[in-house]
Image 1 (cartoon, rainbow, N blue to C red):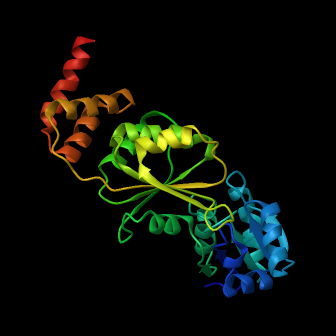
Image 2 (tube, rainbow, N blue to C red):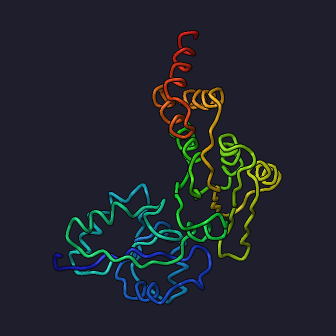
Length: 279
């Protein structure tokens, strides 16, 4: 390591300030500079622990531009802390580029662990937490969205998703379309906060429930694992056609559906090519 400062990557409470750890408090009290995703929200945290460091913004749009100043601060021997709005930086939040650059320049990088909406939600869901998949936010449209949903449908581990309030019903409908209406989901809202809520049930009923409600707050959704089923050739071809409609190539769609269902890849591919010949 080079002589100089150190970078502390700190997990912050996901809602309840009572979850501030002793290590987080110490990090904020000894920090020379705090780089924050939202300086206004971080100001509340700093006031809570009584810390008064310099505060700079560090969000998706300016992370690369901030790099020279941040590295310069480390070169001066300063203690630099990065935090996101809630939870761990770099997990669907800025921070990865900063960690990479600091380590590449030879400065020590220390992670202060803490609260996580991902692990909190997967435990609350009760679908099993020995193995799970974190998918972050679903793509909004196109081929990438179709392929991600197809993987979720056949995943044999719980899948954790972050969902924006205004996208909740749309994403639940899309999940139900690929899993069927009976796949269980856990919808967690405002975790660790005063109005924390956990709703568990079939995704078809979830669509009905949340279509009639105004979605407020921050949502983390857990999709129960699916069992690999032996589907009919016709059903498998139908799933592959949906992938092609979403932007996948016939070859790619046939390979993916064959792997998930056990149906012959050649049978699926020939049907898709036949569709193209008739169009």
